[in-house]
Length: 198
Image: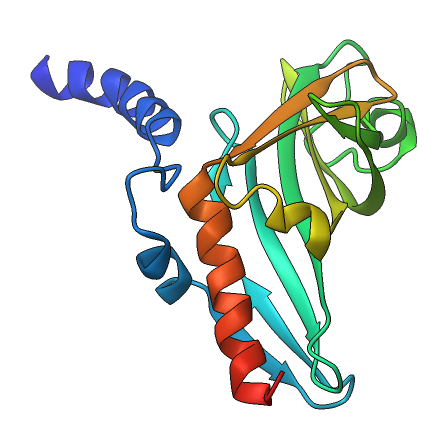
């Protein structure tokens, strides 16, 4: 009986763990910067940065990704968002029923983002996948990017940043970045820029 209770509580524990994930607000920017991976892309002559993942709910994750031009040190930032979700299976689709109206009709299609000051940001649609259905739900995942200029991000290094992404389906997602997280992203970019001689 104890094993059954633990098995039933396990998903709840995992869900709470996702909600309580770090937003890096209590982590020094230097430590955040140390967690950011940097890869050189020689073909495009850029450096590609990936900051740690943050969470917006049970399964949604987001992070700041930066591309720096090695020729001039210019940095461009994208908030990369992964949104897995499910909807009720009202069409009777089977698990192997990929494609068809189940895979097309229920995508959220994020198209715009803004901050509390009314600034709007370009949204780039990414990968969309339909992962089939069971008897109750159909499973989907969308990725998208929000383009943030380096100048704008630098204004948020002491206050943090909050964005709202809105979709054609009427669903929105709030994305919050602590000041230490943003400062860590900027610090890591500046470290690499200094190495390049800018």
